[in-house]
Image (cartoon, rainbow, N blue to C red):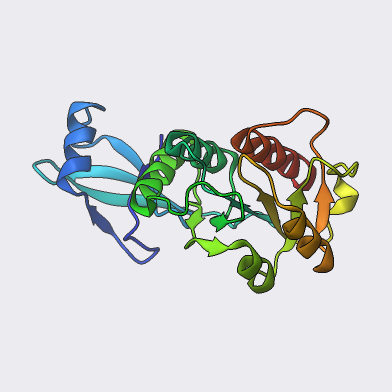
Length: 229
């Protein structure tokens, strides 16, 4: 498991770990002076560190650095907040494990919730990043209206629509920056689908089954990862 520490760079020699993480490292991991830990800043940098001081705050010395480049294709998901916050949080956790760049909550006509707890989502991405050994933490964007998001975002956008027969395949991708757009439990309105068509956004279907929003999101993200690696 990689530990997360956002405030370090390639020029740093030592890291002073906060009290909460220090306590976790000593009590849960049972680490001692001389033991090795791995830290990431969530931006591609991995530091192999040796514990040199032990106390309320442990101090580690960086002994090796690895700077990983991001994937050539970045994946972004825009999705309506879900009625049940725990399901949206589950989605954020799993999307982080899969490895995506950004998550944007969007408000649509049938969105039952208009807000998300950004601070909690940030904590979830960090926890998931550590658990899955990811080196890049997804960015949680501010909530936007559906129409504003379509106008302002420059990614190649792909929208899930049960009524189309198009399927998501490699030939559908023509950009290194892709955004998958998923609606709320009630789906997108006819006006929203038409607005997407007017903006030349690719429609895709995940089959005949009506999937929950979070299921459709993970299914779509998994396909995108598999066809763009």
